[in-house]
Length: 125
Image (cartoon, rainbow, N blue to C red):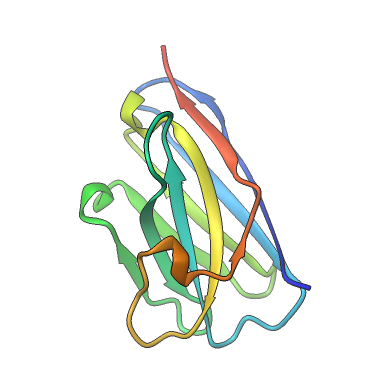
């Protein structure tokens, strides 16, 4: 059974940085794309970044390019999302998700079969 567990969220001041982790277990993830989504209060969940498990090819939403970096450590079965220059608009629950397939990045949450429980990121002074 696939399990995704996010961690690393918390309260951070504007301008700060954070690294979120997503520990994946339950199967071999070769052939999977791992996605990061976020849901801000009162808003729909939105795609922010994705990475292919095997070769580490990445894709980002235009709104986060330059500030978000997605990476993975296949030895630790963990995907990371590094965020810099945080603003209050980054306040959201951040979710990790997994989708089987690596041809073309999927940005709709309906394309992802497996989800973590989310980790809260709050940006405030």
